[in-house]
Length: 390
Image (tube, rainbow, N blue to C red; front, top):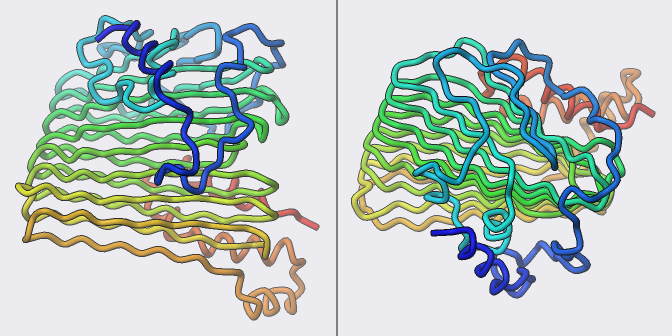
């Protein structure tokens, strides 16, 4: 594998369109990824303060021009990623158009390796900032949790201004060795004029545990892919997603739970609230291989429509090749209960206050799944803040 192979693949692969099943509800008309420069745009002010206020063990900042490491915990690798790493591209290569674009041109990435048996009591924090007008930001994240390691990594992706026009593209590979536990928090709060594409792929080995929180608040349009491979017996993964769209935003999540080994467990739960004319798409697939007996897999997607002009498309799927499994899924699209709204407003709450109360109740079970208190509180505040106070 080489960079020229990725460049060739990107050139040959067509831009996805709505004739392709996985892009049926996400139209990229008007988007040309090659029209965005690489570090050539006009730089805006630095990104505003992040959503999370954390006491961290390690801190890294990724922009169009650099990777800056400001703090490194002793005994771990927390450093710029180079193309020499043996596991690079093994989970996210260049078979798909946007993954190929990332592999072809990325310059900035982060390598995180937590050695065998090491436990970090404070999180690692990665701040990704899109700061240049009409510019593309490509980054990669490669994380290795060696046997028995336990740690948390928080990634926040934001824009320098709320109207910054840009294109962002992430490729992230996570390797959880035997008995490790990795908590990953990914919060996307890009500008409403930014096209965002990301591919995340994790491989979870024997008795390892992946706990993933995904928050989607910004961006204009794009697609986020999340794949977890339960590759070792006893491996578990839990993914908790919360998103809120308004205006003309369009979010698209494509999730894949791949059960390869027996006695594995996966649990995906995504909830979203939508306002104005925004749209959200969630496509979830559980696949159980022939040898993955005793699989326990669950996925759900619930959507709350706060305006009559929003549109949500949940698409759950199952592909089961084993015969001793437990796989369930659920998907709903519902509107605000008028009686609940009337009841709250009749007791002196404004419409905005009443809607915030209903939204908090809708997301409460999702928030309860988040073990990290600072993340749980920040997401709750961010969700409620999207409701106008008037």
